[in-house]
Image (tube, rainbow, N blue to C red):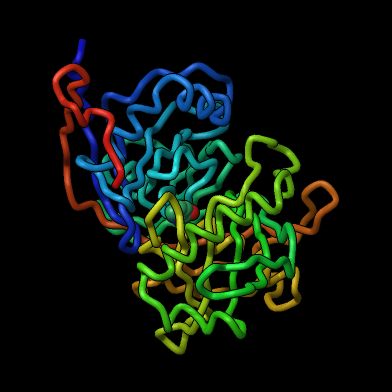
Length: 335
Ligand code: PYC
């Protein structure tokens, strides 16, 4: 059969897209979501590229597919499909996916107000608040997050030498704070930040090979995102970021895994304490509320368990067909 039909519900989390595939997703082999993620990437990556890349998606497109949980204690499991690949964890994707699933009755939580969600990166606990049929907010308590390295150096062709830290919040982030060669995101356009990011992400992974490997999952083993920081728009916010992902995307949301990595960095540097909130603004000014819920260890590294709260809105229902025989762009393209 050459025509594949995917029923999707489209939403955005604080401005960044989430396309949940509710019908047409493949059956996957594997006893955990990480095993299923590996199987999907081997056998079905064309579904991701077909639904995320142009002409059916765009540079920022991000989505998910739900699966039954592997542990009966849990409520549901999720695979993230993004322009950047299948991320182990995606914060804005979790908030959007849970909002859609709860509003559309796709998940029946065992405990009202809470969902135990299996992600490839591990168990993520969800709290949510519903007003009538609408989900007003979703708070995710993320996987253990930690500062993996600090004060590393890289040479940017345009900016010159940059100092950066690397934090893990579900993915590895190079975090670039304002410094003499980079005055902060408020002074740059999204296109400029994308251009700087493309270059330094490649250089960081070339110059620091095998340096960033998750202690419990060696499949998570490189810097995939760059988190640039700068002055918040709203003086009540704690910080603002521009998160680069994929090949040409700046996250329109404040980025859930980025916010987790940022809080782990600040906590390790003594700048954010246990129980303290961190209101994080995105490049467009939308906000997540983060919090250091617990201080803990990951292997022998100091780590935190962060939470991130935000909202999402459903905006569309989409039946997408991919004709793999007839459409020359069935598998999508990027320019
Ligand atoms: O919210 O974690 C996130 C995320 C990752 C990539 C884009 N958004």
